[in-house]
Image (cartoon, rainbow, N blue to C red):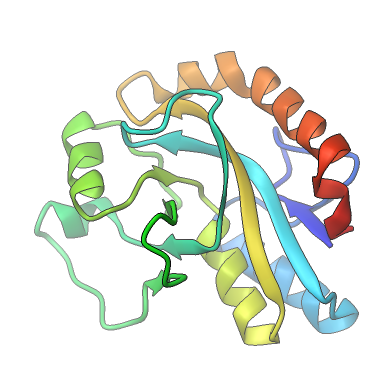
Length: 176
């Protein structure tokens, strides 16, 4: 099964599960309970903390849910906030309901080993793990996480969508 967030990231071959951590976790959990696919692929965009280039694409099976307040020293969490595959070269996707627009915060995320952010991916991996379903994501970077992140995203989302459709034709179909 292939899923995507929805709204501005809708694909004819994927089911929309909602934007952000809460919508995606709830909607995907319902789908997984009712349909029990063998594997799950999430497709979407991400914002780079600095190392990944715009329109760069990659797969990931690792995500975290680390908020800006944590890297700024103003918060902690008593709950699990990482789902990592034990591979040294894995690109770790951070998830939050907020988009990072502060370059200094982006740099701190990089120091933690996080490469980029996508609002839904941590929830996707969490829901899939709870349902016993193998999952991964395929991402295309649309922007850097800085002050003009939103404008850069809007400028590049069409090209990123084209990259995803092209990869679907070549290799992503196997996840249907």
